Length: 133
Image (cartoon, rainbow, N blue to C red):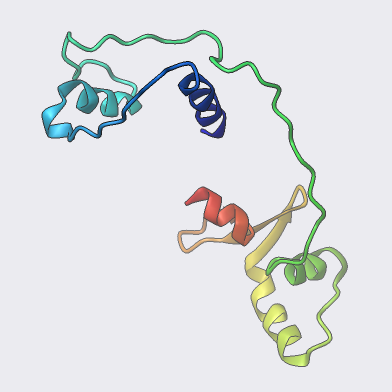
């Protein structure tokens, strides 16, 4: 979305004047129909809404992936224990890890926890959890 915001800001400079007006969905059938485009079925849309499938990106910028240094997370003690058998120095923390560790597994260097329904759930740090929400 940041790229689109930058593009809009550049386009705004080419206008002498512009206004933005929010129209409630109840008053705008097109906006309501477009909000339903997230589904894969277009049968529910009226014939007034045209759907265009783009074959290429509208913004031609190279995607850059940044590398971050590994930091300690809540998963670190479990991964250390499962990989190397190393427990934390704190006796209480070590006991908690030892008790909970059997419900965790390392698969391709990623931590998974056995779920309530016996499915393996991928563990994520706080940043990725917020991103997923």
